[in-house]
Length: 487
Ligand SMILES: NC(=O)C1=CN([C@@H]2O[C@H](COP(=O)(O)OP(=O)(O)OC[C@H]3O[C@@H](n4cnc5c(N)ncnc54)[C@H](O)[C@@H]3O)[C@@H](O)[C@H]2O)C=CC1
Ligand SMILES: N/C(=C\C=C\C(=O)O)C(=O)O
Image (tube, rainbow, N blue to C red):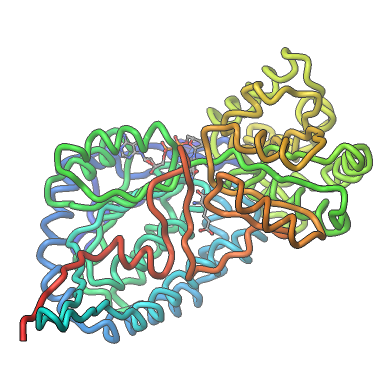
């Protein structure tokens, strides 16, 4: 019971110091449904203190050379790496993801985020043009913008938070970050490493709490000129409204309804396991996960048979079980939301071939109150169904047949989102042709989620505004100026 256990109590990190808060919110262990930590319920007051600290730190930090800042980022990466196991355990407990994923993906990528931006900040060049007939030389200079507001979600907590902090501070900004109130622990653990890494007080400030309270206070603050946000589309809309009076610079990385398009000449040996992974990795709680699988009619039955077999082997287990492929969903409310989609699909006459309501999920007694569900495959569903249109963000995927290339492109593009797609075919001309026609910021052909951090990452349509990556993040986190010299 919550009352009889010692709870982990987090504190805000402002100006290089851990500070308690006046009120706290409960945070749950998704694998048991029990409260296990308490997160500061910060608001305007804490944001004001963080702005003061970030403002004071800005002149010193922004005046350092990129090389000096890069050294600090490298040291932080090393310290995170030394704590990899401890951080992975914490991420898995806090989020519900498997320990294996936290160990092999979340924390290594968080380390890589700092190393990557420590390196890439050293290699930017500015533009220069000459106008001899006017006796002019034009060139650009870039400078950090100031205090960056960073708001991150609960699905890849440290991974996505560091993907924002690293480029922001590498470019010389100071930051105020707000992780999701559902998964705050690893951000708090990272704060303990900042001083040792040589991050000066006030360069990285973390205020914990809910979106409506501390998130809105941060977004509305007039001294925070840029906001980088990853999360849902409705929240992005709210952030856009609050930012408008201040003309803030926004980077919005939002959801997806990502198609996999599988042609009859696809290599099913690779396609089937990868599409199971792209549908169900991290409990389907990645904005890049596949949720609509279009399969060419001639191989539809064969694909479905193999896909179901492979899905049934995708083991749901407690997060600490190293053999589990999938852990618990983030919250009770989210589990109910995901289940409600399956109910709606069933009511519409779709078939649920495996998973929720079809197969039995077996869990240890201690985890009966956890937020687990089985990976679920839906067929015989119309493109207009909400399961084919809306982001479910859970382990649910729909499989439908198609006839022609032209038809499938149209159907794949017929949603409001445009984040990520996969295309499977051994015809290189076709994959290139289809990739170009898809309304999607990212297209993986014959693979999924192979990340090249140098290149633009982000979505079209309702999937976002702006791109992140080496050059894109640098441009977002700096202000450019064009200078003309008349000689
Ligand atoms: N990257 C993605 O595509 C993600 C998509 N989602 C989608 O969003 C749905 C809801 O999940 P949520 O956690 O509620 O996402 P959310 O968009 O509400 O939360 C993301 C972050 O924004 C903050 N936030 C919430 N309201 C805010 C506000 N008014 N002002 C400033 N910050 C605010 C949250 O505290 C959190 O740190 C999920 O079911 C999923 O469909 C959720 C997380 C990530
Ligand atoms: N933004 C998300 C994933 C990003 C992955 C990456 O940068 O590799 C998300 O799931 O919200």
